[in-house]
Length: 90
Image (cartoon, rainbow, N blue to C red; front, side, top):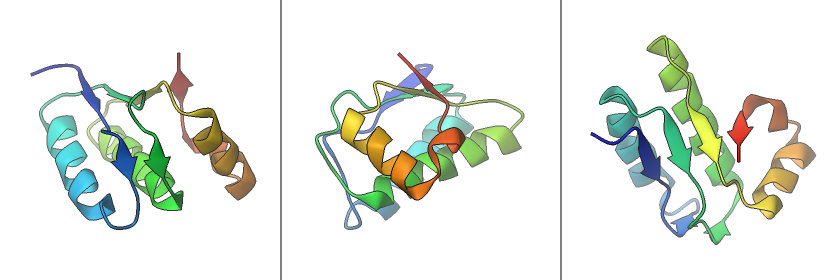
């Protein structure tokens, strides 16, 4: 099991449920970071998924680092006022 998993290139409303479940499985297996470097196509659903993953990690007594968050997604998080919920690391 890798400590890090990746989002993939797309995280939109259409792919959010599958992405959420895949990430939850990674977190359950001990992942402590998600790498968003490949993420090029996303909408606000990506924020919901990232926040849900962090909540799931917290419920396990762990934390989930968000790596390489695209600047446009970080801006969206600020616009929605949820940027403080994403603990990004570079």
